Image (tube, rainbow, N blue to C red; front, side):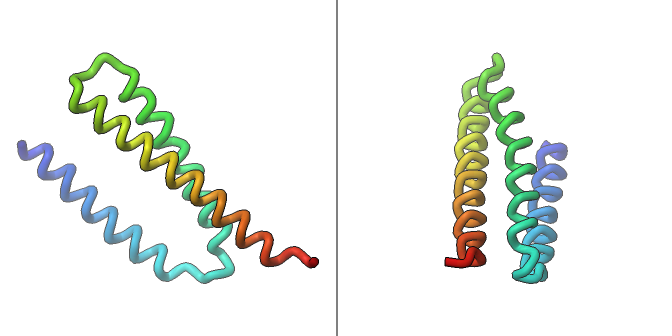
Length: 92
């Protein structure tokens, strides 16, 4: 149980650090940052597919499916936002 507690602590700490870093990014750097975030989410998709398809207990496979859904939602919405922002800079 202490291993779970330490992993939870690292997750919460990483969440707050990530939010702090993202909030301080200039709006000009948002599109490249979104591309990087999509790449990281793609790694999470591959990992969650491996976990979901492996022979693990049902609870772990359900968590893998939830992670797969969340990562895919992040990737698709990131591409949609990036495309929308790039359309703002196109001349009509």
